[in-house]
Image (tube, rainbow over all chains, first blue to last red):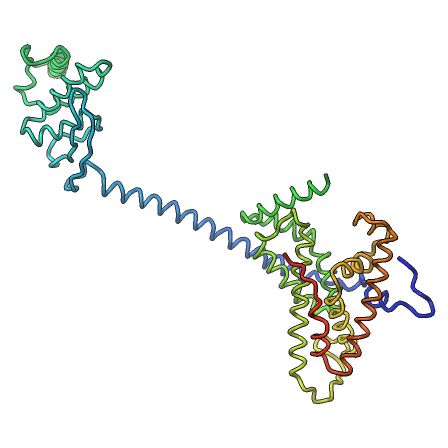
Length: 191
Length: 210
């Protein structure tokens, strides 16, 4: 710092030199920290609330979508989509027409055709599942779906339909029927 | 390298505060409070009541607009100083308008002010604040470095990447300008009142807040 002229003391020096002793601001400092921290805290709460609200909105939107478009909901408006059925052309999938049918099963392309087949051809559910199983059985690498279709068929079959019919049943369906019969007889030792 | 570290650190703290971290805010606050307060007090012509008001407003503005702070453009304290400088200028404008409307019943001579300081000191402080608000940014900065921060010419030259001679010269010009403006503000006050003095000064204000 250049020394001010002694005859004419530099007023700038006198006016601008900071006085170190007048920084008595502890009260202000604490109060301001509290106030500004409060703003940050409030902002954080608002952000968390917004995130929670957004998540809730997403959940509600999902629930509403499921409620509107869930295909097996009793009384839901019929929705149709075109799926490819193995061994056949595109099949229209309709909602399950009533609620007294078999329990809902996960949809697969060929199984989707079951509801349609039941609705249009007036065949029994057993028959529709059986036909789907037959189609799967003819397809390569679809054995598990065939088993599933036949299982569904057997779960809705009448006593007559559960009987083994070598003329109509495929080897797999006959094997499953036989297995069910054995299961029943083992479950009921009196028979 | 040091600047990079500073930027990274302040970016991290800024992000943490924006995410609601009170600890990060306290770190920034503790690091800069005293320096900011000293600066505001200096800019306010050592009028403590005014300085308190500006500091308070400055911190509230900072916490609400922290998103605007960009560490790459300058450090946090510089950003706060920019806000504070604008607030001081606004305060001077308000004060000047208020004074121009007032008709002192005692002919403008009073014994003391509301904060207990003699009116003469208060007026002097106001003129210093007014003069500092009128100085070009570069001149204000060199006077601040010299008189507020107490740095030597060599230190300022090193920090600013300039020669000591250049800084010495800048300091001399800044002092001269301060002296001239300060004297002129006094003369204006005596001849035409405070409002005129403010009108004389404010058009040349530097704008510092980004």
